[in-house]
Image 1 (spheres, one colour):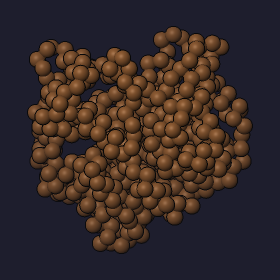
Image 2 (cartoon, helix red, strand yellow):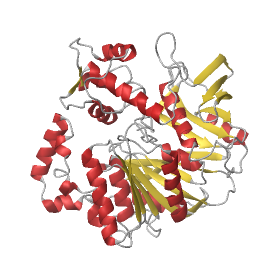
Image 3 (cartoon, helix red, strand yellow):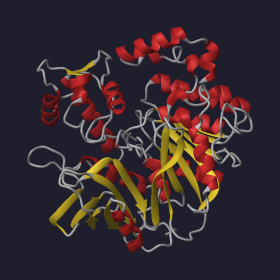
Image 4 (spheres, one colour):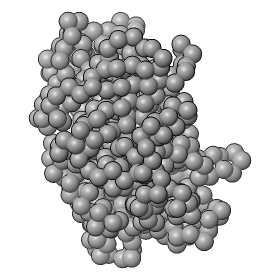
Length: 501
């Protein structure tokens, strides 16, 4: 949630979004000065503990984070589950993040004289006529690359979405509209554009490119030098454009949108991956945890990101199935977005459960009104499912109650007491896996919570029992995040290529 960063990865490396840490720690970690300083900013009542309320209103809470994302991060750091964070816990989480980045070959950022990390993004000169120059210190190509930033007309207090426009990648250009036309279009739509040219460097391609994309996302989410709205950060290859806030569902009291990123002009048709976010309600970060999706844009795919997943209000418990409506809309408008009609679906954490249901419930099953494109197929041809809950009836047995905080544990105990086994089966992914279902790549981190590992293992076992083609990876030494190992990402992309291309 690294990428994401914006919670994430997810999507997306041991990530820190908007400066907040993912990781699990013990209480004996050494405390560094920067952690102590940040801890003091959170600890407003001076009791040497950070409560959840203090964490919610801390120094990073106004940079696009929402309550659900912050609660998840708080629980990841709260290793002893006592509902508050000690300084060693907080500092240890930061230390573990830094060690993880070093282990994976991502150098720690340089430190400034005040002890804060230096961003790879640096600006030069004054903002004039809406244009700003700067440099990007690229870990990928190991040099500083000039960048040009164009900013739309804004009031001083305003922020805006931002598009990182990646030029000169080693992968082929697919879109046919000129850069000038596309960039002017982004500006006219009120978006800031950061242009960078990798000049055909052979390293600037997937899967190695994904770590760089994640770094772009996190650096822009954290910057205070540019008027970035951290909820809306896009990283796209040259030739691609974006249709924002495409309406999927509008029932009068419920509206759900998606963003579609696709090669422009008369490009040849490409497959598309639809990402389901981990947010269950309308609100922040329609494009959170988009680490894989942005990487796939550089690999010959289009991408779409759905606003929120609706949780158990939607099919199979409810009759509305937004993911299926999205699939039908994408096929109905395939010519508009240069799509081949081959669709994949992906999700991480809570989004994984929704994405799995979209993959394994097919042909109108457990759905009411199919919406305005009922003649289109609702099937996805591949699924990428990461670290989700898929067998509700086994959650307690799998250790869920032992690995969440007191507030969430109490709520879960009340819910489990109320539900019958049939009701649990109704919302379990494993209930709906049948032999004709879509191939799935399943993954989870070895250092994720044990109940998530157990749940993903159960889904893999069910796929094996019924004969669904699948691949299951438990990634060594990885917490609750998207896989950032280029070798495994390469396996994921080859899997999706085989079924979608």
